[in-house]
Amino acid sequence: MVNIGIDLGGTNIAAGIVDRTGKIVAKASCPTLADRPAQAVAADMSALCLKLMAENGVAMSQIGSVGVGLPGVADCEAGMVPFCTNLGWHDVPLRALLQERINKPVYLENDANVAALAEASAGISRGASDSIFITLGTGVGGGVISGGRLLRGRYGKGAELGHFIYQPGGEPCSCGLNGCWERYASATALIRMAQQAVGKNEAHPIAKLAGGTARISARTVIDAAREGDPTAKDIFAQYCRHVAAGLITLCNIFDPQIVAIGGGVSGAGEFLLAPVREMVQPRVFCSRLGTPRIEKALLGNDAGIIGAAMLHPGA
Amino acid sequence: MVNIGIDLGGTNIAAGIVDRTGKIVAKASCPTLADRPAQAVAADMSALCLKLMAENGVAMSQIGSVGVGLPGVADCEAGMVPFCTNLGWHDVPLRALLQERINKPVYLENDANVAALAEASAGISRGASDSIFITLGTGVGGGVISGGRLLRGRYGKGAELGHFIYQPGGEPCSCGLNGCWERYASATALIRMAQQAVGKNEAHPIAKLAGGTARISARTVIDAAREGDPTAKDIFAQYCRHVAAGLITLCNIFDPQIVAIGGGVSGAGEFLLAPVREMVQPRVFCSRLGTPRIEKALLGNDAGIIGAAMLHPGA
Image (cartoon, rainbow over all chains, first blue to last red; front, side):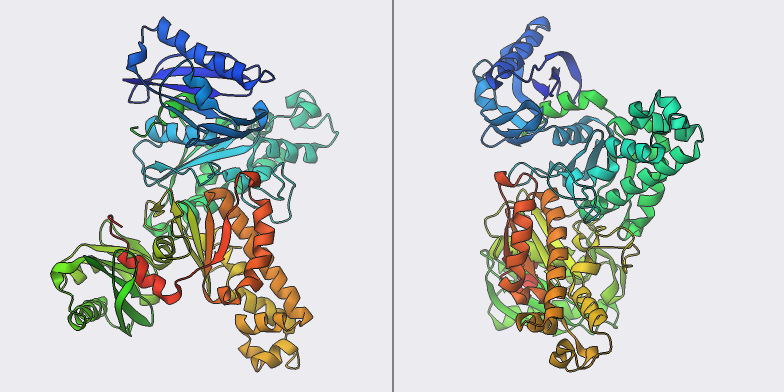
């Protein structure tokens, strides 16, 4: 028995056939073309799966379940997507749409939760009963495995780890609050901090490395800091403090064995992880009883497919 | 079959025989006398249970389990209390000590987690798969039921809900961090805020109501605010904002159906709950999908006994 995992993104749909151990046997992708009706997107999702099965000699009888990770809120019980901004979806009956062509149990989940499940099933957090996954990208997403199970919440919007209030009255957030952690710990925040420091100074080393102030990315700030530029070093140190302070909050709430960090900024590797570890580990509540490992997530883009395939209750 | 629940406090030991529905059949208490060796305290815990059973005609064969809630960290797997400041305990093998006289399965848990379990089993949060319990007292404690299960964490120190960083660089906390939510949302914080506002002005209405500036309590601030004293009203409004902001963080992390609030400050009832509800409910992430009820905890001091009796896996 194998399972299908679908990573439904705003730009691409990626699908994979995944074995019980979390290994991808085969995968394929196609564009989402999100401005189409949801029915058309769901039809392409099904078609992609059927094509994968045909090309890899996998019969319908071998498929246990279909899981979908999506960039929004999923109501797995009802099989609905109540809300997905990136796709412009409201109350889409995704399970029913998929089951029209693939009559298997369908599980839906938020993509960050799916990635957390993937890392806990087949990634860096494998074997840990309690783990947190954080993605530091355009925003900050995350998921939590607590006592061996994915934390879902009552309304399918649990573990919105980027949206706890980190700085009361701070930077306005798209969610309507002020001072969400996302506004300080995302790649977007790192870029904003750099742009504020550099201003319109095109001669600044960060700007030169980026090829212009308008093109500053998280990567250029990190590269400039690695090369020793004092502004970039200061900014990145401050960014690491924001990441660490938020992680202390999450560790005191969840008491995990391991925190897996993914997303664009995690590309910095130990340059990010070492200072964060140093700030977090001695400061978690009652650290002598145990402190979490803090590691780079392993599965990268495959996490979406693997975790979605692991959504079935038997995983 | 009934279960025994023991609420082990710094001052008193309370024990009860609890039926399957969470109803206390009989209860009794004795002083903890915490400066004695742990062996002596554990012996009194056992003796109290045996006395309760004898007095109420409950045979040893009718007892399913013994649960203990304690004001520290519990390692339920090992049956140990690694750390309990109030009792001065380090690495106490409490399960073994109790089993010397009552040879039943023994479950250990932090007292705030126990109270959360009680409210979810037999209190205001009964029937909710996802709930949070918060106690606003000398400190801020709490517990979380997620997907029908108590959140424990890996090292038995999960759900330290008073110790997330609420104000980076803020008030120093006994846990070693700065700006923990506890420093803004506890009764102690409310008193501190009032004392700062009143200073040494013994003629201030809050001071007069308290019988002197040194005797200001959470209760006097609340009473003064109810009576319309502008300073007390301002302070309590600010306190409510701190409570609400922290709850938004917790709701975005856990996505609960209900938040139960206990502890001394919850005595304010709707005077606290109404403004907190008004601030939290419209601000939680994606509130149109569902917002948590925010209610006063029901079980008061009995929560410790009831929740401890519910710690067994069959509950």
